[in-house]
Length: 114
Picture 1 (spheres, rainbow, N blue to C red):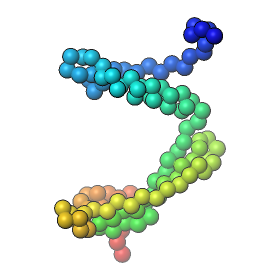
Picture 2 (cartoon, helix red, strand yellow):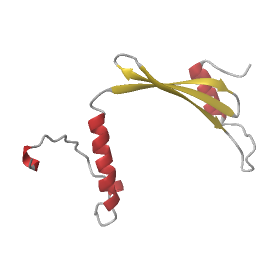
Picture 3 (tube, one colour):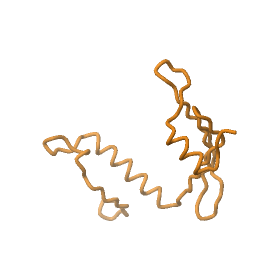
Picture 4 (cartoon, helix red, strand yellow):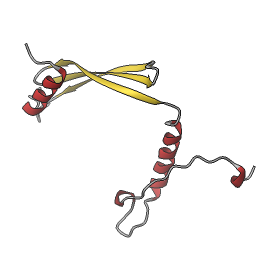
């Protein structure tokens, strides 16, 4: 089978400054990244997923997140996960997160310290 008789998936990529050096030449490694992007765009044609995030715990120095991954449009649960983020100082001891972040997170998710 020759190349002209095969079915092709096409993904159009816009080359940006980040893809090139100062002379305008495309970095060689970008071609491999673009192959990955093209493959991912092809696979994305099959279905979309919805990623949901909630906060399961919130203190002044820690946020615990929970995630759910569901397939659209049928809502089938594909997976779930957890992640904890802890603020530390330069000595690697617990530290306070920025007040704006704490307040915004507490407000959005209806949480806060008792």
